[in-house]
Image (tube, rainbow, N blue to C red; front, side, top):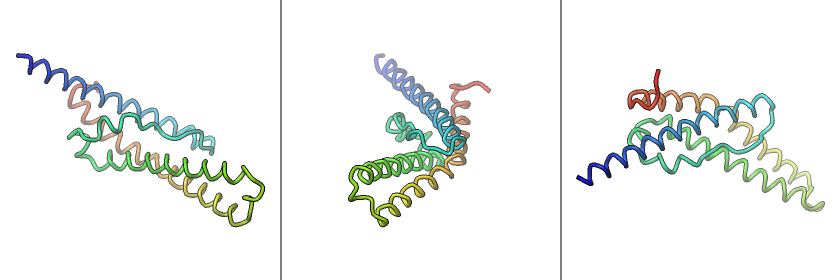
Length: 141
């Protein structure tokens, strides 16, 4: 009898995590639009829910969702590397060489190019996740 409650509790937690992942994805879409409109990176993307949902069958069956997570994590890593190098570069006058300047520019270009493709990745993953959540009754059409 208690195993029934445990199963329901586990299913409820999975549904909650999926819903929270979908909300996070929507927030990432909004972040993308703000950064794209401003032509300025304001922050990294949200990734809190990915570790909680990446093992769920519904999520694993869609390459688009895995690609979304990979793209978000890649962008966040590129942002981190750029910010660290930028801090090092401006931290000491001796670091301000033409070679280091070119490297900083290349890191910024890499980060910007990762951002440009993000809209399509987020939309495709969001559509696949939303479709599955509609089937589960977590969202209403």
